[in-house]
Length: 185
Image (cartoon, rainbow, N blue to C red; front, side):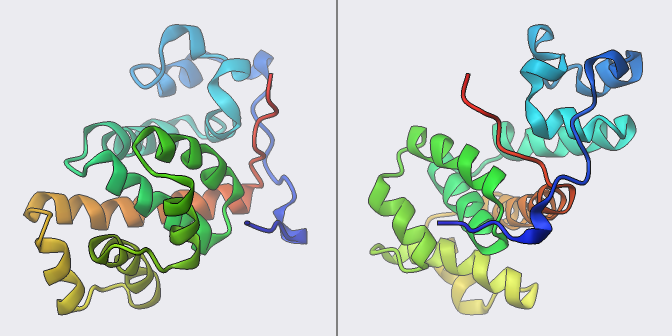
């Protein structure tokens, strides 16, 4: 379970509907279907990020690649993102990616093992360990790189490193801005 702290207060609120101008719509164009290009349907993350449209557009392009076009298998991608979210205490990222992780084939036991840092499978341990190593040392050991190469090719290992870094940056932003998880409708 990820615990919120006093410092998790909202610092940047989602941009109100009456402030969604052409620059904001341009920032999310191509990343969101037209029916979601509004503050009610975009979600709190995007509705907050669009306070800086140029940054949002650039960041979304990179994030879209990591989430939708990366060479990483979805199950591994979600393991990585969940471990980042857990280590960073990012409730928003965790909440959204538990759902995506289950769609990608992670079981409740897999998710619990990601939190504890002790998956049963050797390769899953290497994936979770890669997140931990990069977080602690900004580098992977030769042993971890080798273990990852048992199932991941060069491009996939590159995508793994960038997924860890990208979602770490996102967790930092989410936590700092105080983006709240959406209420169920």
